[in-house]
Length: 319
Image 1 (cartoon, rainbow, N blue to C red):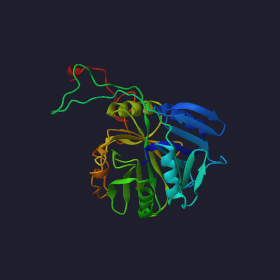
Image 2: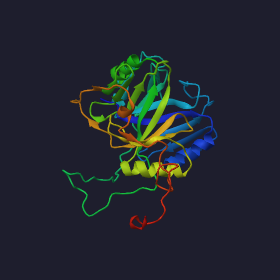
Image 3: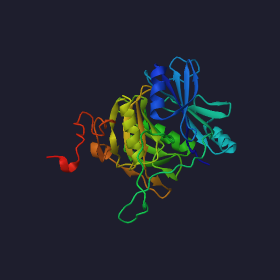
Image 4: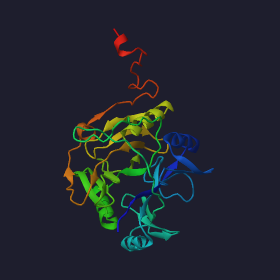
């Protein structure tokens, strides 16, 4: 029995028309629309709901600004759901209704579980030629004009009490620790066998709750680049990227999100098993990013923002 991953997230936001435009540009499919709610899907059916902040049935906000209001995690079966219900029945805010169970986590966030509604998808991704393995023969790597995210891969929150929150997800839902910033942060994955992290918890000195970012999985590094440049062409602001994390090994590109906090394209994270031993890291710029481009890449010039664009001359014509 284990949680499989994120099935749905729900934002509470103030400007739904801007959010509609952003998430369509981001590469999600709009599958439902009302005056107070937008519903999007990724390629595998993971849902992103953006609701008006004053919508009556929205869970409580953990911060006084647009933010995530709810995270729904998927499980394999109804039997799993019943076992998790027994594990969290005594937690604050326990609910059991309409095929979901849930409670309020120690950070004040509404956490729900359901039998997963995501679907299997067959997706062709890039292969890479390295010194020891050359598997891409007689075909070039792909280039993407935009991204089509596969799923919501992970969420990152600022928490009031790191130790309490980490223990909650490990003890109630069976999450496993991947790596840590001792006393500052914990990378958690849903199960011993899986990607580097599905949930990252960070504690700031003030001990306040909030959303840091939501990350969307794409096929490969080329789609990180293609998606990021498309979003740049659409006029949305880069926060940082593209770049690469030494912890998790993933390639990233972060943008500012009108629905709240930051949003990320990422690919190529580490895959771990029960044999993995969590590591401790001291926070710092070289730990966060092996390399990163400040301000992003302009989607038209294909150069760093505010850098001189290409002249159109061939290399041998430049003097």
